[in-house]
Image (cartoon, rainbow, N blue to C red; front, side, top):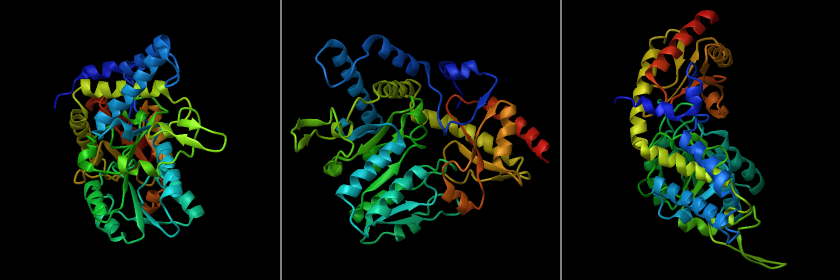
Amino acid sequence: MSYNYHIRQKFPFIIKHQNAVYFDNAATTQKPVDVLQSIQDYYENTNANIHRGVHHWSLKATEAYEDARKSVAQFINAASPSEIIFTSGTTHSINLLADCLFHTYFKKDDEIILSVLEHHSNILPWQNRSSIFGTNLKFAQLNAHYQIDTEHLLSLINEKTKLIAISHVSNTLGSINDIQKIIQTAHQHNIPVMIDAAQSIAHLPIDIQQLNPDFLVFSGHKIYAPTGIGILYAKQKYHHRLYPFSSGGGAIIDVNLHNTEFADVPLRLEAGTPNIEGAIGLKHAIDFIYKEGGIHQFYLWEEELKKYLYEKLFELSNDLDIYTTLNTPSVSVISFNVKNQHPFDVGTLLNNYGIAVRTGHHCTQPLMKHLKIPGTVRASLAIYNTLEEIDKFIEALKKTIKLLK
């Protein structure tokens, strides 16, 4: 497809740093001017607390906040806005869900299935609480294409399995996992599934009605929205399991000295003053995506970028170990190493040429141990990146390789 260069002009960071190359989008994306203006507009014209007043500005702020909830529900095709819970990000979403399920659902010796490629944020919440509550973790291995081995994961299911919590897309390798088959099979055994969509939400259309997960989490800042705003999607049938362990103002119906009646989900899980500006920014990020053709159009351009980048990296394969192949379904994330060189050294030299990539273990140390490497250099692409930037990146990489030899 032909690239609409006008999109680049909508990102002030990109305009300001035109001579640099920002290939660290899996860590966080830049923000379009519409998002930045929406936050400024809120503080200049509607700044008030929500759900707590009858005056004009409180009502307007509440309307904007709840419109954001409706926008997210529409974006992922949830059955109802009430299934959308605002959090501070993916990490908060998973910890919130874990707190609820460990107190209302899991029993001693129950089992939770994860995978070895999970981000630490989808390991530690389950690991920490399992050590307290006596549940056990099982880990699915990877196939030859660095995806979750679906058959191995399904073989781990038994009568003790009470949850499967896995990533849709690897944040390190970009590989897309077969979550559809996993969800379908899990449901045949009445096992709920949580999907970490932090790395898929900006690249792949997410349709809750089609995928049918029970829980799904992601962060706004991965999808052109501000930091500090995230989503926990929770299917209605599990709302009775979501007890508010973080409680306070706004989450209640009636408070007595010795007991409290809590509000329904989602408000019972959003105690205190929430990130109103973040929710508004997330709505405008979603509006921006729709305005520019939708996630599928973003995916098509990013696929072109990914293929071009891979081909250019493959030309240097005598000097590189590449952990992504075009034969594996993946998003626009490619991890590699310069042979016999530490990724930090590579990233530092690339930075000297104005190239921003992520280096290290990417919060996936179990995956690094599986691959028997300390870390990788990760190039992750977004809608505002270009083929010309890839050329500039490759030239800088060639110079880096030469310097390191």
